[in-house]
Length: 215
Image (cartoon, one colour):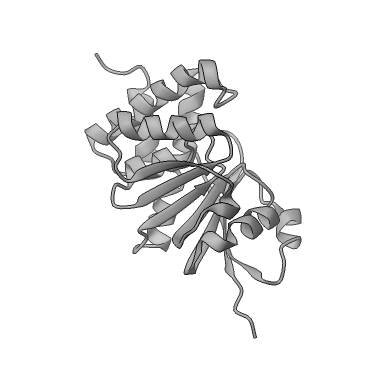
């Protein structure tokens, strides 16, 4: 029997121009179900309705796949900071099986959920870690976060995990002008990229950053 959100997922993928196999789509829907099931006990998300979780979480994270892979075609390692219920870590690992994704969270039950999702979905390229990001050793090509902290704190706390050639990709709502202004001179903003998430009437953007070249 077809999954209730299968058609909406296919439409969202078409709108985002992201190509996933039938098996990958089935795994994404299985992840959605797993997230909602565990959410009843572990409070992984404030959303409770499958349609909302699909739009606000799954499609929202899928919206970064093309920008990420186009900007970084040789990308092999990603660190998701403050991963919570695995967003975007699980979605990136599902959509990009060639990328090794590590998801770190200070809450043990959230890291445990990500490990469970990796096991249930057969994602050998996904690992959940219970730790502070300051204690995670890299190097990672890309360090990302979604609704985690200010840009200043995100870059400061995760600096030690970033590869020398690495970049930060912060998922934000509206353009965080105040946070950008508060960045130290040691961090440079490479680009601000607007995102359109199918079915979501809200502003979304990516803030791309890297360590500044010191004179």
